Image 1 (tube, rainbow, N blue to C red):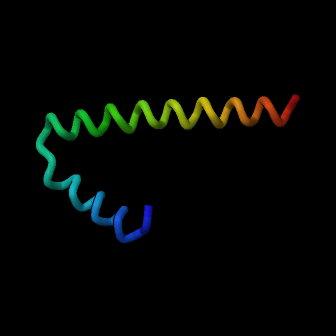
Image 2: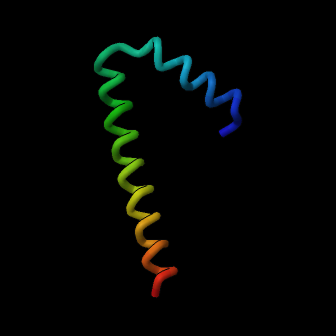
Length: 48
């Protein structure tokens, strides 16, 4: 994502209502878990 697009994304967060914020948080939480799992797998693969 380009820096400008990311800035627009962050600015749009201010316009969300509470239910949308909760949905966004949930999605980010899932993405973070996936990213952390992939990182852990990569670290273990390098160590083996």
